[in-house]
Length: 509
Image 1 (cartoon, rainbow, N blue to C red):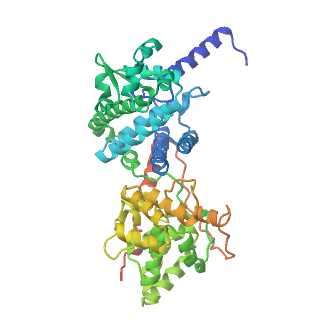
Image 2: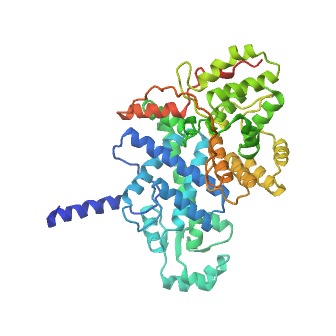
Image 3: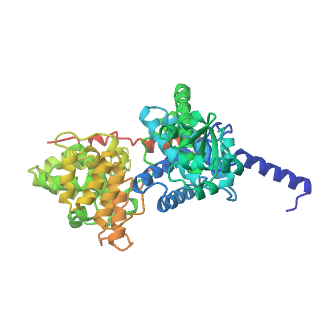
């Protein structure tokens, strides 16, 4: 294909205009996007941004921010999710566009409460800090200007003139560092934190701030602007929520699980009933381990525990026949009449496997669902131990699991800081004797699968030589042909339809 010189000039101009829209890999998000996008792209961008910010949160808890390990893992996440992260890369328009649009979508979802706003601001600040840390020095001044920050690097002559004062006012600064480092002239009002700590040189209403200290000022500016923007977004939210296409996604996005559903499709028949006791101590997360122990000791679980544990067992590979046998054997040990079990529970267990009623194939609960919904009451054993257990009881439980005192202390600190999934991830690393598990934990069945890979040398659990049940054809789900049906599909996956399943274990006798 050949182009005339005029066409080549027009193509180059179009490319320059695209690049001018997003001149840097980071921004203050001062202008909202104005282009039209489909609802399918809207939801995909929103989900990818949530995944990114949750990775930022997990990495910030698991590693010291700014270290080489933290930087490399966060860069890997950005690359995997196709967001912008580094200057001077080819073909950066699309990642930067995705970054811009997805940020504004999440403003709509995370402006709805003070807690959501605080979480969103913190993760966005950590993301900006990372991107600024790898921004080439020759790009910093342009970024500050584009972000409407009146921070200007002083000339070498001015730097030499004030070198001694700057060294005296800036802790950990030496003459050689000041000579090599850029110094920024900043309005005094923007450097109040440094002034309070007596860490900055002031002259004629301006602060002279070394590059290493300007990051904190930039982050403060970003926090103030984003906080104000979220407050304004919250005011206009009713108009957005009136759109029935967007409302379900925005309402559930902040607490939705966006990972693998761990349905039983690929795992049917991979374990036998005889393996469950040993697997519970080696590969079950604490939430399922305590449910299994309570079931074996009491020969009964109340409905919340049976729902949580029953779907987990289904996800790790229990067939319908195995599930019926497992629950019946255990309940009969608790002096339940076999006929009563058959009449009160068999139908509902079949229902959970999609064999009765609407034939919905229910999926195991994610960590978020366990943490945020149906908290346990007295006599219950379901829920998340890191979220719902008393710290002293949690400590005793971890001691019984043979976790070291140092490991227990780390886990309790994470749980106290509300980092429940990271605490469970730390527990995983302790019982498997690994320094870094290499994944972000979001699901009990993910815990089980990753545990089995480690214990089996990178291979999945060996399949048992049992005859699987004849699969029953599922109702076909027509692919979404327009954006509205795609959004409705997402909504149904975000909030699992529990109709009929609540009855699944509703009898507590």
